[in-house]
Image 1 (cartoon, rainbow, N blue to C red):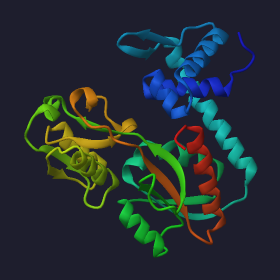
Image 2: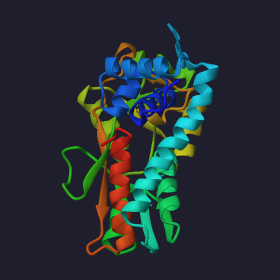
Image 3: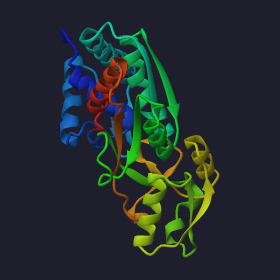
Length: 290
């Protein structure tokens, strides 16, 4: 048995378990697929156990892999917590963070939990809203820092902390919707929205008719509408529920370029907000989104 577990190998293993494939894990970690595969093989060899069952239908964890996954998450979380606490243990106060709901739901829970454990004297006030409202409220001084969606070639304010690959997603009954002549029914967020704008501009550029079938201010509401077969939505690739279908070029869906999540920090910012900003940048970078 090995005398230690390499965090680099554990991170690749956790990424595969979360993404469900070597390719998506590599995208998340910004590593080539063969590199990710090699790292898992090294981990399997070190432990003397097969951690993943590979088949034409995809990957699934073995019993040993399921056992290791919980430990791997705890090891990586403790590592992040130790680094954060040792770097600035005495920080205290309240931080007002604004973020899009979908990003907060999918990517932030672990990041904020690690920060809270490392800085128990910091209170977090997290508000979710549409990007346009977040920017306006940030400018009005309501937030210490915000995460906002933007186009890669958009405004330069803020620091990019995440790149969002976008896909077309629908329920099974709409699998052939791009092959039909009728206007494409869209499930969107209210105007203005980066994903809404990206969907409409992409369809217009390809000469494809469309109509707004359902508008929702929440990710849960949009997913419910898609699940009910009301239309097609543009979603970040990692936020597509398992029961949805991803429509690609083979289904006639035009390619969607990536968007970005940027972090904006108030000037001057209170020390707890500066510390949280640093933590988020480093944590999201380690998760492979920067």
